[in-house]
Length: 342
Image (cartoon, rainbow, N blue to C red; front, side):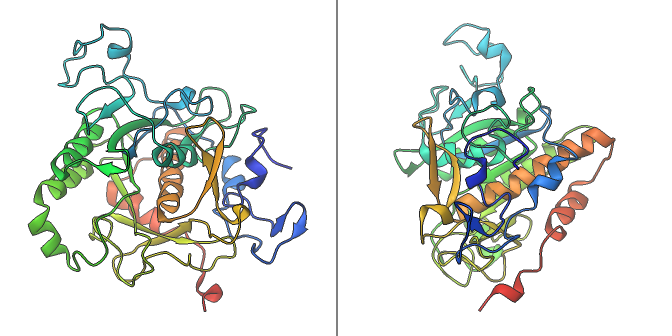
């Protein structure tokens, strides 16, 4: 039995994998090839004081399975259009900001919306999917801030991405999910990457130092996808040593056929496989229904969702961490999956 009533939850094998599809044993699925989420929900399902910024395409903030868990800038929501009501330097940034157009007008994107659903789609609301830190249907889910850096599949400038990361820190986010990367092999050392992308690294370090949840964690957590080139070096910025770089496994615990891997990668999470729809990751889509996708872009939000759930539980029990302590806790809370690799 599923703990919540979200109709698509039984297809979210990445949360609870019993090795079956349609009730029959599946050769594509291995029992336990998931993130062991259902037992975790017995302790905590989320906390609306935890904010995750999705640095991606624009999240559909009025999606019926996301709306209740969106971060809302109340000063702007209750203010006047065209006016910077909260005087934070951004006009009409109600749910976040569009860093492509430099406006508060978010344009929806399937990729960003899918990522957001894995992190914190509203759970137990009888709609669509459940989010890892989506709460229990009582307004207690973690919140999603949308920081749009893609429009029609095209990324904004590196400078604007850096500004998006700073915006997230300055407006309450404590985790950033980055399901994007630069081309494979562009850089193979931290020093060369920093030399060429110093403004981006300054922004990431700013987030690490200035994004805080008082009494719980003293810095921000930066999570990146490793890339989908089946390449033996993960892509930057994820590969940079201080970031959490996420590779992907499928529903039988084997590495995704597409995933980058190797030195610079830190942790593996469900990213799905392409053998059938049932082996992909099920989450929210712009169409208000669900979509099945696969990639390290889908793996990274599993780690972001688990981080958000962990901080929610820390709030519940009055536990505090340094940023380094909490990041090490994430990276050590793992299955041993070597036995499944060939």
